[in-house]
Length: 180
Image: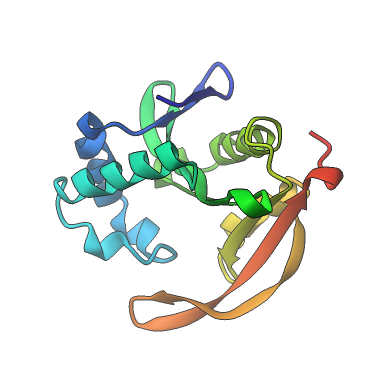
């Protein structure tokens, strides 16, 4: 099982089958908060819906094509982060993340993602790390900007959110630019 210790307060851990209820509860209690930017929230209607999702997360970890991890702050599950996609042939990974509303504003996301970037370059041997955010998701955009990612461009109508397409921004960090 993958466990990444970020600091004294935060651990990133691979979600296990037994964790399906805590993931569901976090999403269910934060639906209106998460729904604005995450296109899958409405489709997760019961804790059991996570059983197959967690199995898929475990499979992508096992085959090296992704790395979905729970964010645990002081032992409490507060969100997810990880590599939604890892393309080994291109040494490229794409990071995604979300936090419960109560966990925001405490530096949890920035500390977690900063550590995940280091893990990507040092352990996964990636050359390029990407983060894609909604153009108007200013809170999410602040994270890659704070971490020194470079804005590469706008992806028009990149993602469908329930009833409309929205534009996203791609940020990137290259190994040669990374300052750790």
